[in-house]
Image (cartoon, rainbow, N blue to C red; front, side):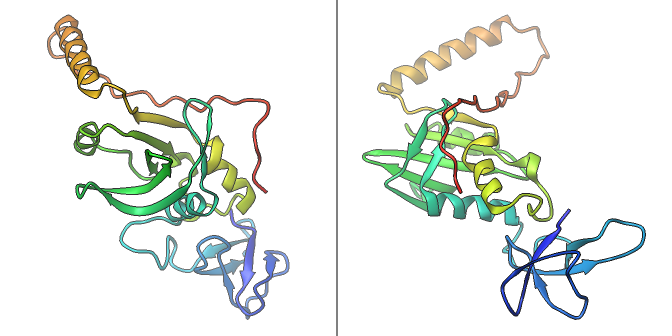
Length: 221
């Protein structure tokens, strides 16, 4: 529930208790128009004028856009192994090797990291198959638990930490020193596992594990 909004004229944050119906307000995160709701039945709150994401291109949620902008600004992310990765540069919405559109690509020295933010859907099998043809690190950050018309239930600082470390994340692929040997090993292992499965049983989807937490973690203000 959205309790804070920006006054369109002054740019100041206004709580719902101070909001007036003859003023104009914008969402703190996506900057689209919001309306104060002060009924007698439901708790007082701001709601988006369109009911869902406004002013964004085909199907992209404000949550997805905010996550990419966070990475572009801070150039750092917790990886699934609990390590903080600092990037020399970050590019968003780039085509990798002329094949796939990637949410964000982070560069650190000669190493490349492909980052996908899962809000309404995860990386599908076809895309994953193409990704596996390249020897590169691929990370998926799962933001589906925070999927709302707009994620303003959290302050910008709190949401930064959701993207940075709190949201579950997993490796879709790791960069290997000997990729051909590793793919050969995976193929042998896959055939061995299929030979042991009863007929008609489908292979399991990969399980998404939550990020492991540590006591000494950098915080973003």
